[in-house]
Amino acid sequence: MTSAVLTTDHAGVRTLAMHRPEVHNAFDDALVAELAAAVEAAGRDPAVRAVVLTGSGASFSAGADLNWMRGMAKAGEQENRDDSLRLARLMRSLQFCPKPTLARVNGAAYGGGVGLVACCDIAIGADGTKFGLTEVKLGLVPAVISPYVVAAIGLRQARRLFLTGEVFDAAEAQRIGLLHQVVAPEALDDAVDFALRLLAKAGPEAQREAKQLAFRMGGLDETAAARIDHDNAALIARLRVSPEGQEGLSAFLDKRAPAWIAAR
Image (cartoon, rainbow, N blue to C red; front, side, top):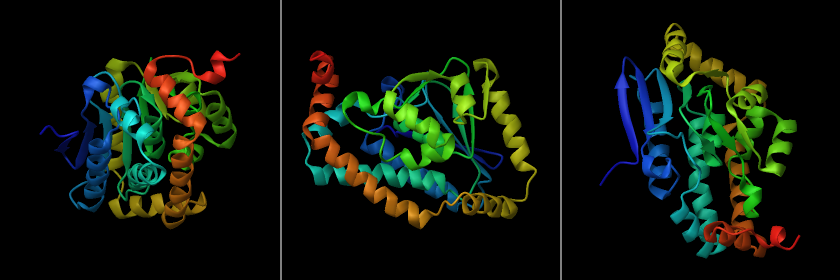
């Protein structure tokens, strides 16, 4: 069975590559579970100084897998809540990983893919990359990833992007704070290597404390985040089984306009 996450180690850096290139590294149950476990293992491993998260192939992550969406559209509210909690665990594990984390954004990131970028300490993206929080177009909201996206880009930008569901480019992602740096695709690896060299010069204990210091000063707490995740999982589960959510998911899967557009 092919792993959904490829793990490589080099000079204290653990690279985790989402490995479903045929579907643009879209999330399914296996990818979410494997990636959460891999992030947590990296956080515990004393040999790991930094973690790089990236995607295999042309994309970083397209968000939810179509087959997964079909299953969730047919599932009940409790099943949807449990599924959302598994995704929440992944985001929370990445956000609060004790090691420095770096998102190597090699291609498009949508929905949960944006959430992963927001959870990393450093985010470097290739010019030409597209991003989107498009859930409202399906009659849904980016509930599980919302705390991490808001922390990354701020409330004002989140309000706009959560409501419009618009697609934006790497330059805009940098302007609003989702990306720290945008480089030409051929320069992406060099930019990542430079950031890793900077990280390697710092004391590992000091880095752990510095990360926790930033969280405290920003009012972020892992225990509180877990409580918020439960509330947000309940919200998205309720919306997925609601009439509007069902219509939005069905329209997307059927490749047609949802009723709220068709009726205009």
